[in-house]
Amino acid sequence: MTVTKTMIENLIDKLNAAENNRPNSTVEETIASIDAVCAPDFQGRLNNQPFHDRETERQGERMLFTMIPDYHRTIGRKVIDPPYAAFEWIITGTVNGEPIESIGCSVGECSEDGLLKTGTVYVDMTQIPGLSE
Image (tube, rainbow, N blue to C red; front, side):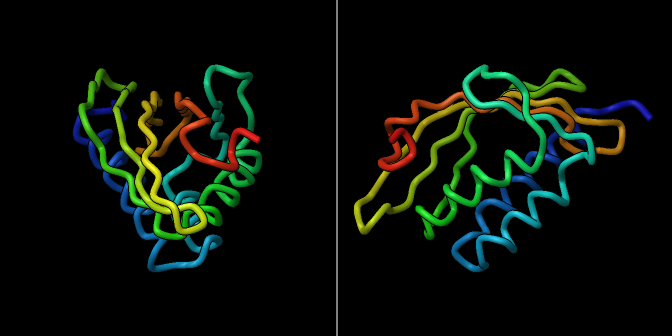
């Protein structure tokens, strides 16, 4: 099957909905929802570091979603060139009662099954207190 722009748009929407459900679900439920849109052989990385597996990604998500219980991500501009996509985003929420805003960009590849095959997140880690320490 050929990866289409519509498949990628649907994948981005599902991934964002999974992450944005954090205020209404537990950390583990949020991570399970993200797992559902990732390919079994998913490879991710942060700020162009070496690729890692989905379990390593879960560890980072566990820390992020625990620190920001009212996590919300707003998707901005998207560039889609199947099977690849890039999109800007803004994360808002609170860390220890203090409001935060983090701006970043994600670049990914969609599998023929419509799942996230690879993903790279580019973000200034100092924008979220506690993550850069």
